[in-house]
Image (cartoon, rainbow, N blue to C red; front, side, top):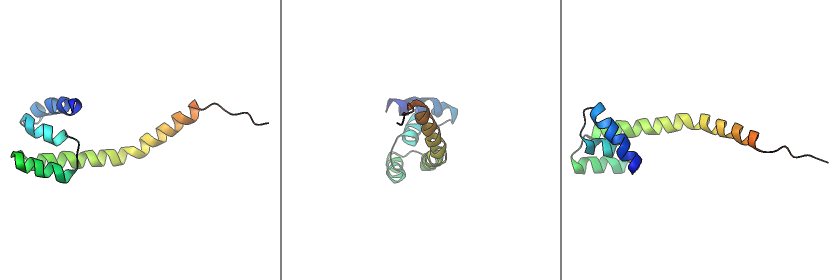
Length: 84
């Protein structure tokens, strides 16, 4: 939650949004739950929705590259076993 609060504190003045809106937008959770929370708290649901969709796209598009990098790092870290 501290990371979420830090990102919200940075994003709120950058996007001219209230801190509560930025906090809900960057909080971890499903998009459906965040939409209900945004509507219940009276914060901008479009801003919250766009940020959650951007997070989903970022994770899904970057995951193959991160996994390929981790696979290369793991292959370099393993010692070569000698076969007899």
